[in-house]
Length: 287
Image 1 (cartoon, rainbow, N blue to C red):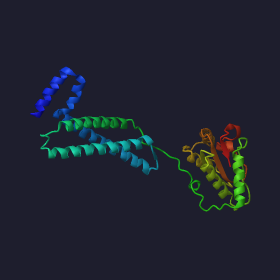
Image 2: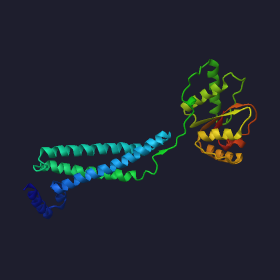
Image 3: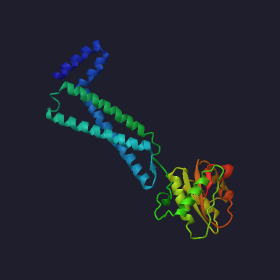
């Protein structure tokens, strides 16, 4: 009987005020039921999409990749709206049981719930459309050296503090591009240089720090490979000069970078390796 009255009222309203008719449509049981079924269907669709994204995210993390910020935000939004939809459906089913399958409806409650269900459906659909734009969910990261994150084992002797200050002053001079730290073997030059690099990175003097062990018998390809790896650059097994050219261009893309070449025993041709310096790239400093 109540449904017949609602239908008659709607027919009357059609002739008077179309906007009001659109609002009163929410009172119809069939419209309410349709909105509820749509809500259930779209929630299940979004659950499937969420599971797919979560699987891709897990696989990316296992590879050590960093998740895109937009993907992380999408997952938070998806979790939130799925939880809301599930709670809405649970509450509705509970109310339905108490009210003999909806045979004694409260029109105000039906209006509010029907409208809310329609709103949630739109939100679910929008999130479902958004996820289709995710061509990738992650990107490769370039892990920093462990020693750049910790000074464990370093002792700040007075002489070291003085030397560190001298290195910093020199490398912040725009007219200086190469600094040499030399001395007898075993006195801690490498430890000192690494501590400077760590502090410089902490103070944001450089955007990136790369390190390569040169040794008494320099292996150019090895040096190129070590530097390239820390820049996320893949160098194929091609001629040294081609590798040098690619490394050179990649280093020039860095705004402020510190290249540390450790354990040098004799003259080293930087151009052969592919390291720009001086006027070629004032943002590249060598230590």
